[in-house]
Image 1 (cartoon, helix red, strand yellow):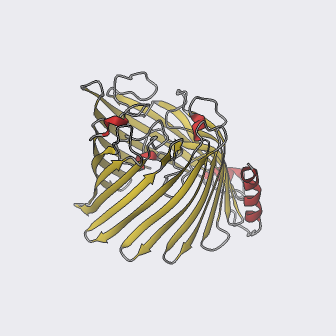
Image 2 (cartoon, one colour; image 1 turned 120 degrees about the vertical axis):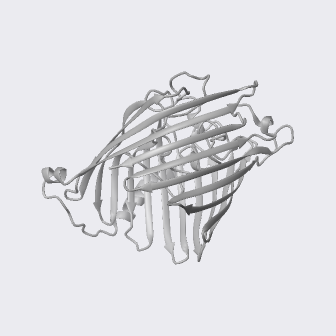
Image 3 (cartoon, one colour; image 1 turned 60 degrees about the vertical axis):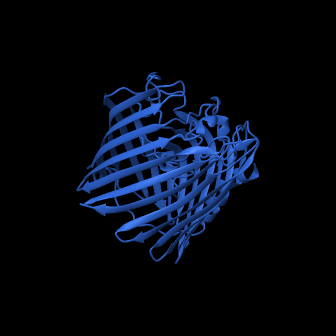
Length: 417
């Protein structure tokens, strides 16, 4: 517990040790408002799901939703600025389980309707640092441990105090204290918020050949909702993002142990090795990600943008934990390029459990996916498809995990003004 209490003080001492004056913009509060910037974002999406069910047959779901986002940022006044962002999600057609409407007979498309304050914070810039207090977007590295789940229409944001410092050349320090997680399920859901007393520290140093990052994420929930205490974990990790000519690669290792009131008592590891190579006109990718498990628990990433990992069909969310009791090893291949003014990508994932199930099997199935994107001016469009094949994974079904053949299609249109 000593490291949890001492982190804020250590960060503050380091940041205020290198003070440098900042140029200030607006001269008055009225001027800060008049020089502010307002933006509107519209994202219309059609999503379709078709999946087998364990009892036989299948179920489907589809939804046509629109996210309307309006935000305003003031100009800086004596280093201070404010930001306000409102989101509205509407559903125009289709039938699906949006996680709160009770349509459990339909497939899950977790985009509940509603209007929320997505972000509202006060920021201060000085001493080569930016301080933010309030509801804000928070992402670190590739979003594997801390992300905003921007794929879903209702974004995940954090009620937090954050510091970002760059006083030392090539070194970036980030600290966050999180008091609440505003999850994608919205205010109407019993699991829409997770109260926390969590400390995050992420430090990266840029070198000519790449960037090395070290991190400490100490998660502790203050919420008594069943299952949330599973999030109480201490995670320590290191990441290397390297570049060598046309080759880019990422190497990462982390270890995690249960903490606080976590009902599990375990220690487990995480590993990532991936690379991409530009072989004009294509870019080829290869990766391997392993989320470990032991007999008492398994490595989890409850604040991650999980859609970015383990394929696009979201088969291994496991109530937001991002892993299953036997662990997950994901080997994946990608190939992408550009044609006719559009970008395209094909992906293949092969999943295995780290530990065999009770039947002695480790097959968790596979997924193929593809997408095409195009941007023009303030507009963009994306067509995406993914198909998961369960293979011999039925022995893992249970405990809230259901691995069944699943197909998903998304068509997204966006506009930013």
